[in-house]
Amino acid sequence: MYDVITIGSATMDVFVECEDANIVSVFTKNKKSEFMSYPYGAKVEISDFDSRVGGGGVNTAYNFANLGYKAGAIFKIGDDIYSQGILKSFENTNVDLSNIIQDPKISTGFSIILVSFQGDRTVLAHRGANGKIKKSDINFEAIKQAKLVYIAPLNGESTKVLDDIVHFAKENDVIVCFNAGTSSIKKGFNYMKKILENAHIVVMNKEEAIMSTGIQVRPDTSKEKFSEELIHPDIIEMFKKLKVRDYQVIVITDGGRGSYAYDGKKFYYCPIFDGPVVSTLGAGDAFASTFCATLAKEGLDIGKALMYGSVNSAGVVSEFGATQGLMTFDEIEQKLKENPDYIYKVKCE
Image (cartoon, rainbow, N blue to C red; front, side, top):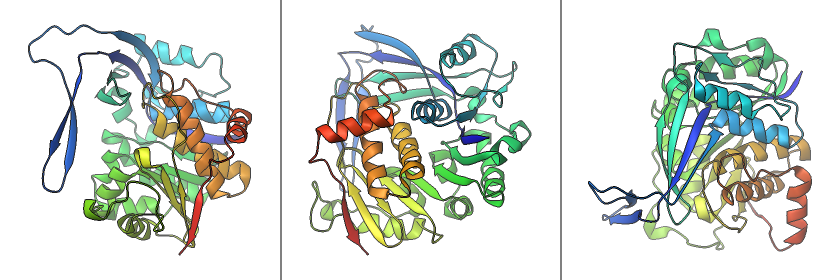
């Protein structure tokens, strides 16, 4: 019996930091885009280098176990030097790996993370085995034995198993937490709706919510800071479209502006928890999985779950690596005691 089973990707992440990286902003009438650039044709010196395990399936399994949950993981890897590194990284954890899939014919996922001086990053990702999960690979009996199944973003052919997983979980009274990814979202809202209908908790960032719903957040009415409106009216419209079942909780993260949640009766807003930023990789996984874990622990206290998720993701971004800086519940609670002014806000519909 598991408290939680995580399903998602597993990668070996190589972090590259270069002081010569430039951040270039490009403006159009309705859009602002930012790019990381390097001198074309030049040999660029690296100022820092590191390698860590990562991927949504790995990161969230680590986090649930660190928070005290009996966790199992389902992810697909090859049989190469990168898979050996991933498996070795779990040696000192309580995560059960008996349900992972290993295929010697496919390479393990691999990413190069280019880190800017601002702490943000651009990821060059080779999906490898992560994009090759098949229905026959999944141990559905393990899912049936779990209280909660956490589905991290899947990509490539692996998105085909989503529908089967969420339907099976729902039929067997397993809570589904779905962290949407762009591969699923690109299939269109009609496809996404089938997944959403069977998910109890849905987490996505603002850009993913825009892609999912087709609703743009108009820059002429954007609020840079918390105001009486609490949440941008266009984000409220996103919530209304994404929430397709009464029992669902929908969460939208908005980068440096914080996070929002909607349960059908109330809107919640939580600012980010301030702290140093070294790398933002893994922040979303830490936030979403901590949110789900806190709801299970605290009895559907949505506001507290947003705060716990923000504190834990702040710990992750303060260090290199997607699983470095993760906190226990006691450590998160201590951080909140030390910052009594940090609080969420609520607005009734």
